[in-house]
Image 1: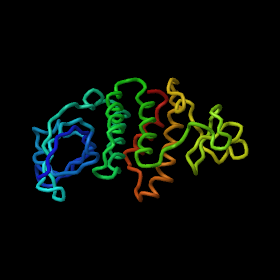
Image 2: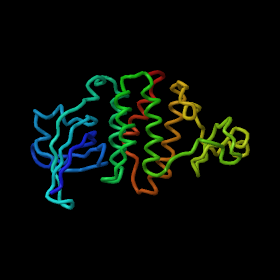
Image 3: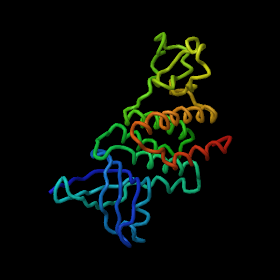
Image 4: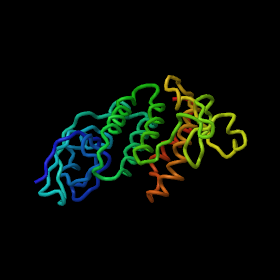
Length: 242
């Protein structure tokens, strides 16, 4: 018998029968988990089983290799305060879709706490800044961390303005001159977290992380970047202020 209690963010639910389904979570102490869940599609449980909700999870299975069952109760509904804000709702959908790419049962408590912090920050003005850093952390969680600590060529820590599309390492303004047109721009707020970025800088940051999601991670792990992220990016590109 395998049993545990944990907290986790609901990523998705898929119907198995009229009222039952298979749910997936990103949990604090057990990583990405999929399991069978009874009555998750009933009208009574509709508000509990919303994508992005923080839930208390009770998991049980006959053995470590058998299909588990989950019972849940609601801790926090992050979308109820932003239900009329398309971009913020798209952030939740993008995060949940990207988290579904994580390997199952691989514990990453630190990244879980960063994800939870992002969701609690959705009502703040700088939520897109937090999302930009979350995507950097997501790349790191997948084993593709970018390095902005110093210039890849000169090792200077000053005037870091570009990123190598091959190595993901920062390059200083002067060192970048011969290859400037082939490099990616590095928004300054990704180095100095005290900076409050403009929407233009946010867009550059998401282009940067998107480049590595599309051209490095997806090819190595054999997946397609979820459409939910594309919808988020498109909704951001359509606005001039948030």
